[in-house]
Image (cartoon, rainbow, N blue to C red; front, side):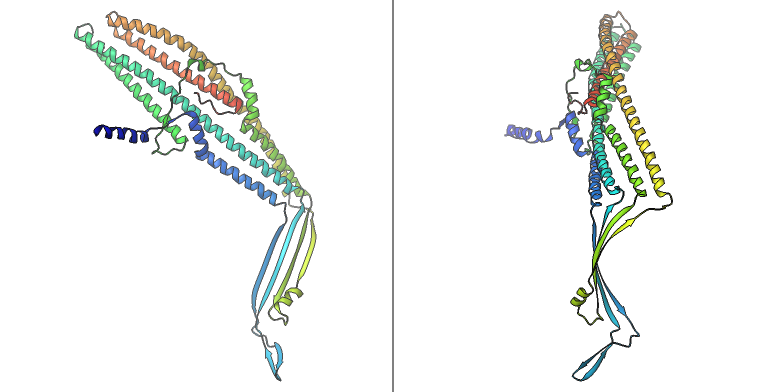
Length: 447
């Protein structure tokens, strides 16, 4: 009976508490749907789409209908309407009366220097820029996720190295205690071994705290609440990934110029500035509008009925209005000059974006090459320091070396191992970012 209850508990409750392990691709997919900054960019894109519809609507005529009912009062009115009924003369004086007016009016701008047409083109470019802003925001989030993810991988392996170092320190401390008991080591030397063991414990705790902090940053980037369980799936990494060929700087840059949304957005900004110049110059050109409408009115004082008045007072009209600007207080000239300045600014912005892009890619490329060289050197250093420390450990166990040499050798080995890990993961990260800029693709989930 008890055995069945235990099995029921294991198979019923434990699967419910299982925690999801997030891969980097899981993080990216989730962020693309839930990140608030990205959602705001998408709303801006929707707003820009509405602006396009609004600018197209400006090409159509506007039609409005109006109706008005008003009450009037003439307190000193003495004359009125006289009627004869059955030989009796009746005079009716209406001091209050009701007026009614009804109409439909339409107006259509036939031509205004192509301002409306250029506004449509301008709004379409703004819509494309808003779409590129969404892509730019998405790229920024993906890069940040890749950076946090690689840092988590590095710290995860760094913790393993620190724990291995702690285990070695614990063994040295135990060996030191044995040597103190037999009189082969002083208590002062043992205290140094104890201090190193405590330092290694601190290093493990500190690395774990850093790992938790980076996981928290990744969790916040995904807009996960504090109640949501979160942990990262640690994929296997190999030295071959760090030793892979690094793409050439110029190749990455040339392909990035063709695919990066910030560059495309800057090019569209130049096109927008060209349209703004044309729109500003339209202020010097005449405009032609077509107007038309019909109206009617009624009055309660009229002897005619309401229906007859609606027909009798019906009026329709249509016409063309030509407006020629003669002098506008230099408003158009100022608008044109400001538009030309904006045009020059847009060209400079494109050059600045290209320069920034090159600097970013160059930084990743230099870091990738530098860290790859460091990784190769660190591999040799770790092997050398490991052999040296193994010899020192044998001598220490035999009582042939002092505690200072042992601790120095251990510190050198730990430093070499940490340098190796750091250069390895920095190389992998920068390689992936270079490929990301090269093809505009999501950073490889195999990190």
